[in-house]
Image (cartoon, rainbow, N blue to C red):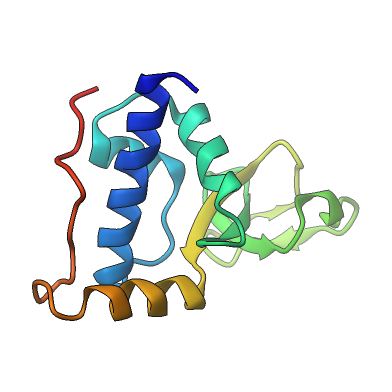
Length: 136
């Protein structure tokens, strides 16, 4: 791993710790990219996936043709492809498309407990950083 990748992962870890302290839930790789000011969402998504199940729980959300997140599946490979659905947001009937699945994350309960336990004497938000976020 090169130094730039190492620093990116360190920044992501620090951000995740801060988010866990603030009880942030349901976030996408794009949220992490925006918070860190970087554009490589694929690299961020791959790193976040590498943190499952140690820190994160993946969420796979099926998008309706109108662009709404309609429902979640545990495994994107088990998507019910032949069952028409009615989107609970917009009411359109559609058949789920395996190419229209969003990836999001929640924190694993044990990770939140660990972060809060390790940061109790710190600031009220329990956010601490090993170093300032790198300017990437």
